Length: 602
Image 1 (cartoon, one colour):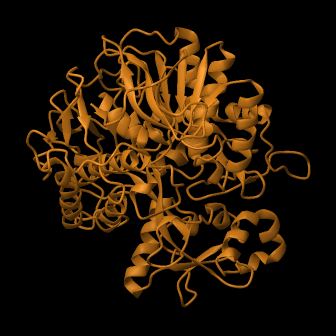
Image 2 (cartoon, one colour):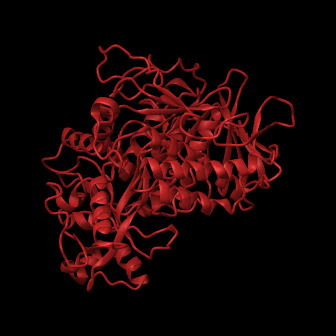
Image 3 (tube, helix red, strand yellow):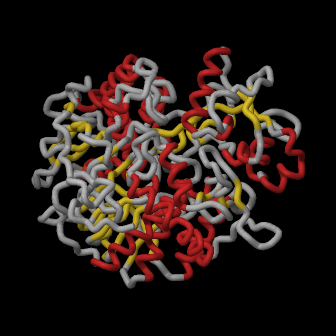
């Protein structure tokens, strides 16, 4: 299955194509290039225009005195609410400190203490000061700068302003590259193809599926949608983290919103209501530094109780000097919107921030499609579980990008096809378990079915090769998708709200399908992005309707309790050969493995 697009008019050959230019993509590209692999980086805008550059708080790693990977592991598992994969987390926290030091060797300049050590702060869910930062609150921008300079210095081939469309496969079903569209400002123009036996998806998140998000406009879920169409499995997509403290710009504000980093609370800012009451006291032992899902829920509850549109973050006690030196980016953003944090509390409310789920991988970043890898926010490695621990995202991108490059360097891009998936378990001695037969079809989840079942309308490829071509949603439907998702699948969810969201999204799809494709939009960036957003929105809603409990950042008002007996399980979504989507619940809490014979690396 592929997007409706013109045939490729130009080609590039490579050993590895990396799609995305954040911390995950550029790290993978640098390491693959160092291993002698011909590497091409494809990125949707400019090299430094992705989500990484917007990261404020920092990168978490056990670098401080008295800290240890084991303590970092414990905090991560607690935040993940019972669904983290311990093996993946152990790899993250054990290899993390070394990965950060290699990032510094690459050229990233972190803030330092008076004695020259790395300056560390705290964020929500961390019991230690282990967040390394740069430029006060411009960590992502510094990391992006260093990696982009390294990419250019090493002469890695890049194709900028290019939207990836679909995965190419060979006759055996192995990865053979990608198709992409260059938007007139890159090295090529129009639709082309990069032929490569290995593809690394590092496309970032899907925050633009909601009306208000911290994500840039390019975060439209393209990697998850591509992977689904290619037959890869998606896991845990219902767990979308809403950042608790996003600058409130008004009830009707849409698009990317300014983030107020968790590091502000880590340095001692308080969450208060309009009366100045610190409502997080008594909610959690860490108060304002509780894991993000807990803080977001507490803010939302207080807003509902008081009929308020937002709460406040009070850091007036910092004083002007601390604001100017430690948080210059946030200070400037607030003042640009008429708010001075030095003299007044900052209005904040939760907004969509991070997808804990995504394309599921093993410990080497391999997906269920041979030759297709994923890392960073687009991937579901098992590290984040039901809720990402603050500042683990940049670290995950670093660590798993290095693991992918090491796998490709050791085995080459032409690896044998992966065996059928089984379960990864925490102990090498534990028997693999098969997936549960507890599977729900698209029809059982309340979506329309029939010849065009699934989240798309399809027609046969005019070339007669049996491929299904997706008719495209008109660009103006993008806001419809976002508003439907914000109303029905935001911080607060219920059976009723999710059913309404499912019906609304299904109506958008039927509008194309019932017209036999005649209403399909013309191929182009806006229609491709909108179609991808509809795809990931419908999968997210299907998973959220299936999970009848509250866990981590998935909050069901009609099922307010966590149910470990029934729901300490993962949900896996796949597109079947007959173009139907199924949602399968795993039989155990163990994160499903991609390749049961893969070595258990630590």
